[in-house]
Every structure is written in structure tokens, then in C-alpha cells.
Image (cartoon, rainbow, N blue to C red; front, side, top):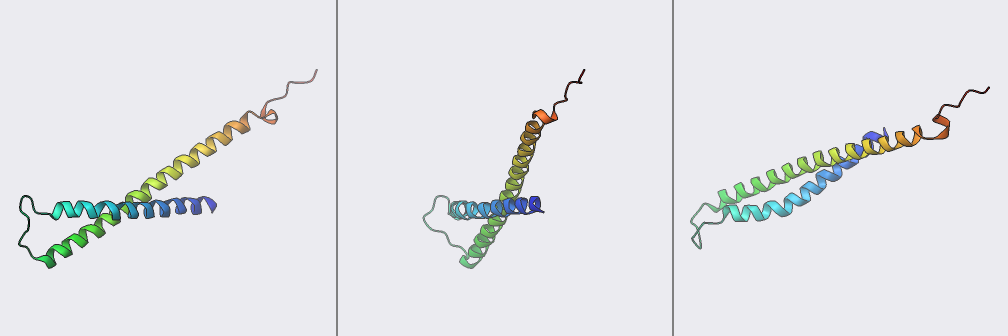
Length: 104
């Protein structure tokens, strides 16, 4: 059960980190994406632009959460496998694991 809890902790931490990074990055990308090309102002439907921008921000945050969660889960599994591998090699080299020579 502790393995599940630790993996869940990694996933939640990664999802939170992805959400935070996406909140910072998506805002700047949306400002650039919705800014007019060569003119100083644009005639547009501000309500529709606001809805689209907020939908894109929320979508970016959800994608960031997903990517962060998957990345953290992958990292947790790699670290767990590496930890188990090093524990197995230590156990194999202890004197109790080495076969004793037969007594004559």
C-alpha cells in the first residue's frame, strides 16, 4: 500500500507542478496568439475573444496537469526501479549469500 501512496504523491505533485507551469506559460502564449499582427488595435468581439482565451487557458492548464502527472509518475517508477536494483546487488554480495565451501 505504501508503493501506491508514494506513486500517487508523485502524480499529484507532478500534476500540481504542471498546472503551475502551464498557468505561467499559457498566459504569455495567449497574449501573443491573440494580439493583432501589424496594427495597434483590432476591431473584434471582446466577449468571444475573452471566452476563447479563457477556454484556451483552462485547456492549457489541464494539459500541463496531465503532462506533469505522467512525467512525475515515470520519474517515480524509474527511481523506484533503480532503488530496488541497488538493494538487490547489495544483498547478493553479502557474506551470508555467498556459498560456504564444504568442510573436509
